[in-house]
Length: 203
Image (cartoon, rainbow, N blue to C red; front, side):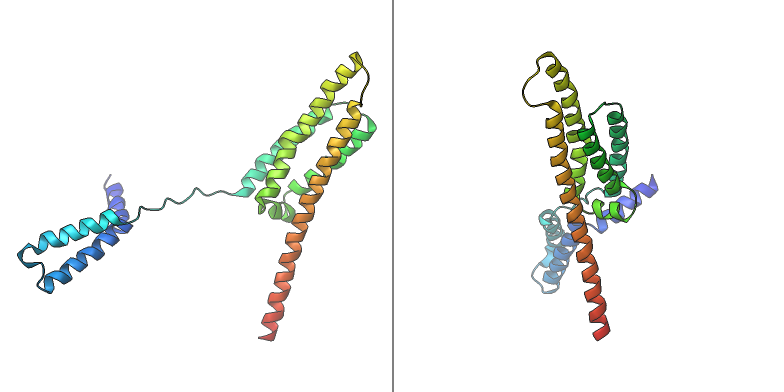
């Protein structure tokens, strides 16, 4: 209890309110020494301290720490569940191969190592991969399963296989754009380091 109280006192002493109030209180002492405050100098100093504490900006609350690598860890678990789900779905050769290639690409991006570290530093890329793994791919496969059943009852129109193959192709293009963006970031980092070494060598 005493430790908690001492910590609270130290926190207030370091706060903006106390610092602003103290600055105003010092100004009150200066007025007292100049003979302006007169006999009421304690009230003047206290009043200025209180005014300074009131007008001080509020303390800024620090945001909670966030480690993007933790998000990737959860995403890897979801990716493992996605692999288990699609493994139990029977797909024709075309969409099946497209899905296998797409999952291989996601797996390479999420594999622990320097590639995943580059991915973790790009929130938009993490969001794109997360949305694909958790929403786009499972919804595409599930829609194929449901539509395939209906097409057996009422054949005609574009085949569910063709729709699924097109959807997976679009997702592969998106994954390739993410990969290209991460590669560009890494290339810029390498160029920056090369420039730094060259400038250091000239100095």
